[in-house]
Image 1 (cartoon, rainbow, N blue to C red):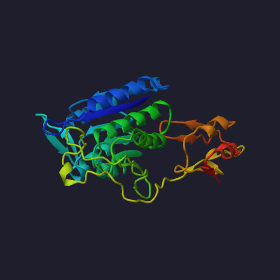
Image 2 (image 1 turned 45 degrees about the vertical axis):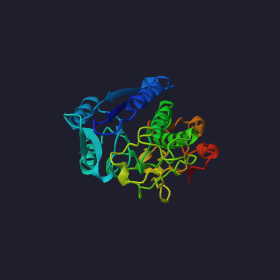
Image 3 (image 1 turned 120 degrees about the horizontal axis):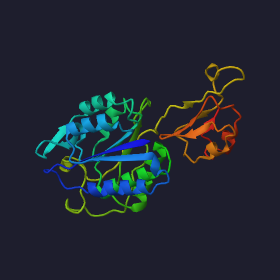
Image 4 (image 1 turned 90 degrees about the horizontal axis):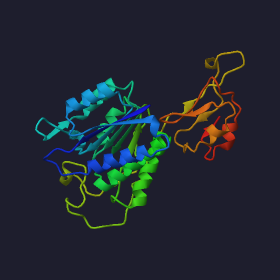
Length: 307
């Protein structure tokens, strides 16, 4: 069972966001998903710091999704006892998720300028997604819904991220969206997806298109992305068993390039030993089953598996 915890916060002294629509559409998508029985969704509204702590302890989620306002290096905006903004610092968030790193496998910060927090959390959590610039309400919703649509269909995190970026592009909303995905242990923490461009339009008043940042005047409205090197994901070492010896005594002849893999499932279907399985985050190869036959290499359409 994959547990998803949604944390929503829209303090009274911040602009109104359609967080209810975002959560409703995520829930509806998972309810209709092919693998709906594999997901459990819990919602936490008007989130205060103590609410996060209790939800994490009680629910032990695998995926944590925050939707609300971000303020860059100052932190993300939760609520205090009076419903006003209470900023939680980057250091506090990173330390918090370090304590739950044994169960949390992905964190999605669907808020403006949350790249700083994502980078810090990625030191402890396998996958973290944040926003490098401001993001409009509609674009944030499109991104989130498509992301969980992909997970509900059994796709891994990297594929879900790419599909979500494409969904915003196809919808033509949000001007430019600047999501970043970060992988624990990667050599760099770059932007892995080009900015999502929409036709030029006039700036809209705050009431028409909200951005998920508490101080938008201090930052550019255009959500552009600086050019960065491509994401470097460590290759997965696959161990193949030798006859009469444990798998740990041999190095597998093949490696899976996480940058190239598109999660099409061709290798899984072709493997005669059923050694390739799809788990929540990615395709993996069972070293106790793999014989090193190479059939997966032959069918991979993007040459992501090599010696």
